Length: 588
Image 1 (cartoon, rainbow, N blue to C red):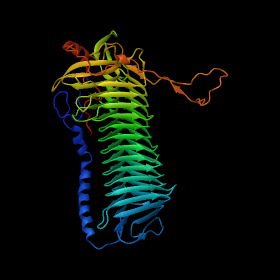
Image 2 (cartoon, one colour; image 1 turned 180 degrees about the vertical axis):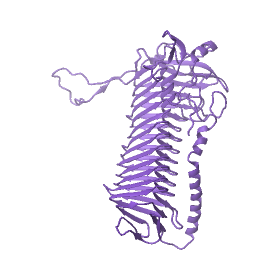
Image 3 (tube, helix red, strand yellow; image 1 turned 90 degrees about the vertical axis):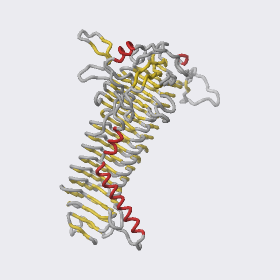
Image 4 (cartoon, one colour; image 1 turned 90 degrees about the horizontal axis):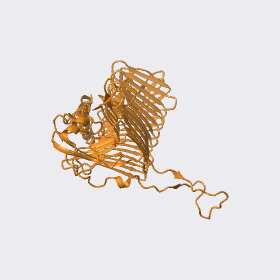
């Protein structure tokens, strides 16, 4: 039987019944898209060799060496009689009402379009640029307002061995029926005020380098089999525009590097079968909005989440009975500076906002909320049921002591690391609910001396009535020995509890600063000179609720009060715990 709160993180090296296969996620990450990436790396190596040799040659004017339009290759300036396309024999190609086959070039190609243009290839790529002998591949696309470029193909619709830059006020529609809509061996940059719509059977937008979206228009990336947006390095979204990414079978957004959203941008990410946002590094949202909805996870990143003046809505429905709306591994979650966060997870084992850290010498495993508004709700709702109920019932309707799930609103857990788990709430309104518990902070250690803590500043506990920070302490038998799990939760009473199902644990809590009030004035009273203006508000000074009951420092040892019988009763039917307890999910 799995121990309470113990299913380890995806990368745990230790084998055994409580542990997942070592490095499953990282190995699958390396395999993701590997056949294309290995090919591109070989090409890049050859490109570097050619580049070095070219530096030893006499200086030449670099330009596209040739173009191929509709199956015909041109080595000198060319165009059609109708004027729908023209190439200047160097880098520039103009499209004006073009309706024809694929376009290919060697070297750098600048494509400018006017009017309505259509590129079609039912057996290959739409627009493709590859390396030339004297110039690396680069594709630049720019269009005027009210102009469109529609590219449809069976393989990659718009692709370059090097980088792709899309600019201007026009609209680019890229559709691939079998591969990626937009694919680059280098970086992809989308600027200007235009619209880009990328729909692929594989990826919507996929690059070996960075993706930068810095526009005030709209970028839509849709995928069926793989990611809506897939960056092998960093993903940067800024410029105040709208970005919508979706996938049916995989992540809406994936990045091997950092994900940064800022500048008033509005991002929406959704997946029907996987996490909406998934990444190997950090996620930062600054003065922007994010709406993420996924299965299993809403947002899952490895190296920290920061919301700074952000508006975030995140949802996660059960994937194999597990769901975590907002989750980071091996790092912290920071919500600050007026952020508004609404997180909801629904599943047998679920958390709304959670982090964990099982590695020594790592600083993560903490949740910091300051000067913000946060709602975190975790539910267990079975299909066809009338509402959340984490207890089993017999045929007579009587409750029996078998707990069907674990659902926690805000959850932090550490096993090793520099400092133990901490949940810090300062001057913020936090509404947390869970069918098991509203808030939990736990630390695992061999001697029971390490404590997970909850810290509250400038925002008293308003509900439940008499709510305070209470202690938790229990022993668990893991594969690598006997450990103590010690921490804190929100609840009532003075006793240290040894079960998350204890009736003293609050399933719902509201923590909020005191209301702002205006100083009362008597009718006809004249304000003294230098007094505050009519609209000025003052804040009542209210001490943190139940500070006397807050457990600080080390909890008193409770010995072996949690006997095997108690453990058996409280853990019956429990197989895992979400986010800090959810089992590894494999990437396809």
